[in-house]
Image: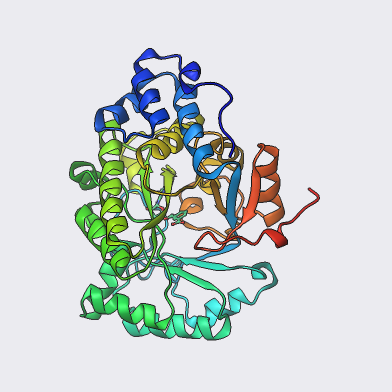
Length: 384
Ligand code: V47
């Protein structure tokens, strides 16, 4: 297994970080106060070195990506999130709802060839009920039996169970019976109640997200987790968020069914939304993006994978993120709406060869994975 060539302490310039470096070297869990120090120090490279040490001991140079298609079945949303530029109200010329047939037609296009994961999150539209999702999942699975269905944020699932007039338990069981296999990590935003009042008044109860993630895990449905950063939050809100995720993960791992597979820090995109009209918020910075990846790798000691989401931080920053704790570049995506509607300037998609090239050029080993991190080494694109 690869490891840093020198003792961890030798990479640290801020001596306040030395006790943390010692804990990391011994594999000890970090505290809330440690989290604050990691956010507060100027020694970003020291934080990165500690995260890289953990990444190397866990994954060596292995770096994952997935051939994935993003789709949103509707952009109509009755919930009010001030940071969201994707939502449309009924009657808006941008508003759309996709049928199962539209989605299948899209997946049959040449650009979707080889896709292994369909990742869908969408708006909260009360006309869509459980029957819509059962029909959608059954039809997509009948046409593409090997395509992994990764659908719903935890809040979305809660909403559609409520408008269907059934319990979350029943909603989840029926979706799984129809083909749902895992859930993305979106919709968590930031758990602090005060910040939620300002950025997502329509989703102010963080416990909904946490409770439903735990329910998914207890039923054997793996999920991911995220945090939206770079808006009006402070370091203490982020540490609190990460430790709430870590606590939940401890419980899910103890339960033994399944748990979070990956954590993805989501960099706030600051255009075309209400939050950007009412607050002056700068774009996140490269250093800030790297720190989020590194702090997550250090605090979330029980979540196996940390993604550097190139759509929100750029392919170049995501590539550097691989040396700051990330082991996953997410995927090919093909077409993305949520970040791009809010101003993201990144490409819509990257090919497998482009992802493999980014990973190799940063000194790591690319591995195409499926949703459960099983790899397809024999099919790796070469010759870039
Ligand atoms: O749910 C919305 C967030 C999420 C903005 O699980 C915004 O593998 C930034 O969940 N700026 C969608 N973020 C993205 C997401 C995701 C991405 C990559 C991988 C995975 C995974 C999940 O983006 C939304 C919301 O939480 N979001 N608006 C915005 N302006």
